[in-house]
Image 1: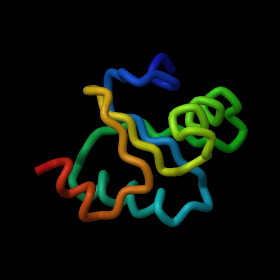
Image 2: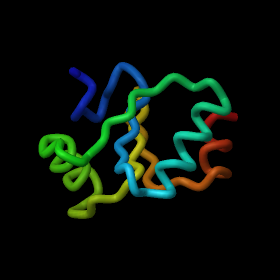
Image 3: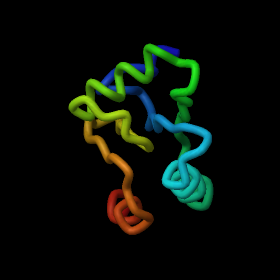
Length: 86
């Protein structure tokens, strides 16, 4: 899992938790638009959790989505996701 904790992943990486409604919404967006991505659950994954906290200035914000070009979206709305892919 080389794309687990990098700011330059080879594919879109979305850090999530199971109980997060924003994560479910982002997952549905990616699935509805057939956008391939890697979902990494923070629960039980200390390395990924520490990475997300570092990227978000001390916050465990999910979903945190990192794109291969190095851009990051944190807790994006459906509209923000649409804008990203237009």
